[in-house]
Image 1: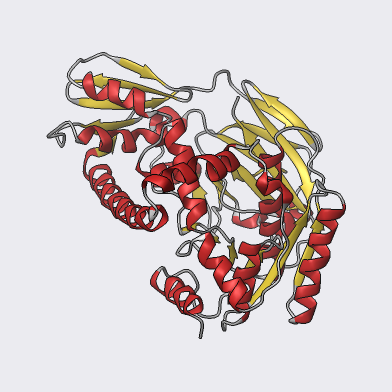
Image 2: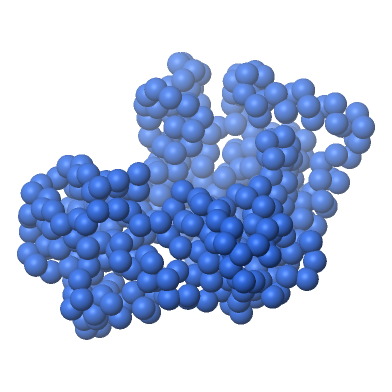
Length: 435
């Protein structure tokens, strides 16, 4: 067994990237990195398939990449998914990333893949850390690329580009060169071709020392995360009109960092968190964010959501976009295979169970529904209490009805009675967008 293969297996095992029985979808461009990843998976016992996006940005070169990937898959009897994607106008890099991950997620739902593997390596992680450092960042940003993030795993982060290249040469692996990688018109390519070589003159072992630094920073992230969880559990409580955070746990200036991490979910950036920390003894001091108002009062921080405005009660006669005061509700029909779960501001429903017109309104006393995953109905008021929704937020919660029955407590939970089932042919997608 080649030494890189052993490191690959050890890295996956140490970081619990793949569990027994899981199927992995590999994002394969045809370049060196992704072809090495595909070969390492092929030589492992891990079930996998590959997916390739053709954006058509490099004409015949893009088509050549697609043909190369498909040929490799056919040669090794690996299932291969191909998709041509038109990126349209705007930021090409961002559009490409969003488009491919949307497609990858669709493939996971349709074919039962558990995780998506990308071929990011140690050089990529260093470049990301440098980009974040140049723009301003915290511990998360300067530690580089995470080994895993939700459904996405990065099993090559242990290796440098040079090590991947050596492995490919040792086994006579073929790959495609992307001509755009040599350009310096993107920030990442500028750092890769101009900045990193200069830093390596100062430290020829830059990548190996960064690897150790990244490990230490990730340990620091875990320590900070545990401390934040401890403070939130013991000092953040429902105030009856929002949330309140007692500040008696603060002992030194280093706790400023912990406070900033606690306030992130409420739209507070690090600069504002510093101001709050410095003003923590000044009662009545206010710090507004886009959706929240943070107020200091007698050794506590009160956090209240800003009300979305006027009362709402309207019919939705059909598919389309509907203005709800300063917010918007998008009603559309989608295929069940395109459904992605996780965003609470998006609800998916079995279209056959829906009757138009829909109705969207504020919840009222006496409202009942059957929350997803529960047996029997529950009062909306009790559900919101169980969900620990502050009183200042409760009054703004909306519900959507179909034929007089609540199908969705917006941003919280859909109804069990209207969920997508295995035999659902069409799905209704409702997306709530704040202004």
